[in-house]
Length: 142
Image (cartoon, rainbow, N blue to C red; front, top):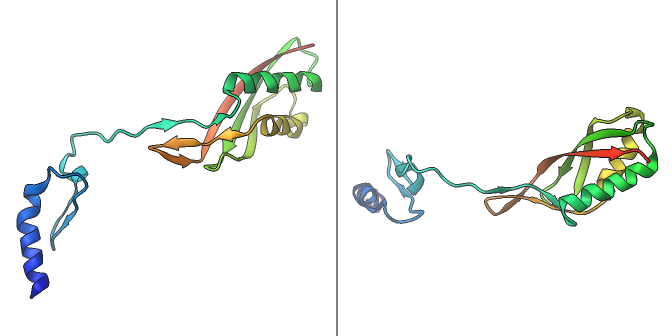
């Protein structure tokens, strides 16, 4: 009997208190939340990519410096594109080489991208999330 009275009161009054933030009202037939009542208002989600702790430009400079010493190609200039996969903890767990002058050095190139710097994880709406970061560097021959 008490549950029935509470359900009846909640059902009658919940539609009138939609102004309040994060109020959830349950009745036997409907569920109302602030977001479901204001369907026309978009929820703003912020996202920030994972970044090297030394900054992206300094990170690229260091990667280029290390790759130059490896002498991967006789070309005057070449590009390397990699996808750096960063966990929500900031740990780089994988590097995928998309473009390189020669794939026979792929493991060495991965090692350079992985070990050059530690990373700050990506953030989505204040929470740390996994992120894949595409990086392209242009290496000029020695």
